[in-house]
Image (tube, rainbow over all chains, first blue to last red):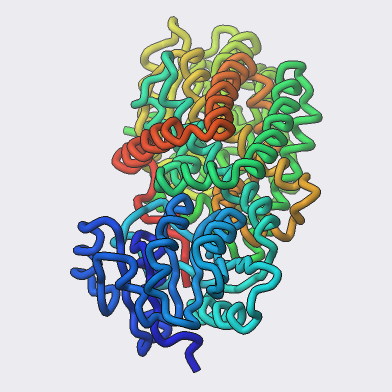
Length: 302
Length: 302
């Protein structure tokens, strides 16, 4: 029993194309349609044969679909929702993969009155972008968070849960606002800081970029991975989750000031105590299967 | 022609034990002695048979050695140097592996007048600690920076260069003060920020630690790797490279404020422009062989 038989994917970048591949692998009888605003992406998706039918417009892709997944930057959700609204089949469920949920829930609700909306956020990704970067196993053993409105149809929620479970994810349901606070710290703040430190390192007068690159194995290189993520997607994340990001950033800045002061006043005990706490967090993330236990992320040393 | 025939390693943690293993692999005829202040480490090194002779005191280990490498936290260099001073052979060269160089150069010079000192910093490591964490290939294709004083014996410098080249490293010579500025941005600041964000995430009231751990794949987990590094080593790094760290941290804070303001005032163009720059830095690090090109650090997705 498949939760859906005709799935439309709007936006075929890293996540959208990974959903397509994962659906093909897990539910090969599902009919897949897809669309992307970028003609070169559409062409590439045709060449890679990722979906059964690639349409030029998003509206055409959703005709007859019983699940529509919007895989576009969160700032584009409202426009795309308005575009597909007249073409949706009765009973179709609308979902998405956006990293911010309160704004998306509100945008989709406003554009699609009376439609079953079950926003979703698969907490998975890589630093690469575009349809070539996707792969079928991206969501395996990763969490997918559903953030339906309080009055959402429970059957629709269960079908979307079954869909993500079939793709290999562990599914959690949570209030959209709480999701945005949790992800502000586990995802949005880390990206903001990573982007910042790369910029800081690039702008020094006394240190050449060649030196920054050569000696990046001292720790800097770890930050550059997520700082290579899609700029448009991340611009939209920060603008649509502004309050939670600014609040978390404020706390981070306060914590950084404490360490700054400890360094200035030679307070080694404060530094040592704080540095000792963090090992347990790393251990817990590895135990939870959310990161590799191999030292140095298992990087090659040959 | 080996650059040294009898090497003493003082401190047998991650780096010291990796040097021992790498020497055994690259220069099997070299006689290796070693010492560590921690009796359980000494016992473990004996069990693992990492060196030919493990001594209780550092002084005993350096007798007859023509190269002594101090692999202790930078805050302990002065004490260890004073301890070995009376036992050094004439002509022995003293080196180290510390992450801060100006302070070490000055500490070693004060404790060992008239001795050939060639400080070194292999820019390599993992988040793990102790003699079991080391491995022979740790330094392969990584940079090792030598920071001898201006009046250092050039022959001694060349011998230490030959030693690290034999261990697989690319060797660069640089002024100690400049090293400390370069590493402040490529290593010390990233560690400070990683430690801070782990602390910030642990202290939130609205988000449980279980949520931080579950959803860490959104980006947070990348930061936890270096935040699991040895607390004593890193306390000493920040206290001995205070000026460069505080200066770099100040610049980072300014850059972060610019992004904070852009988010607050919905300035998407500033965000997008800055996010676009960072991809090139990641690309350059991969092209320089200092990180893996595999998406997501090549983490398993099965």
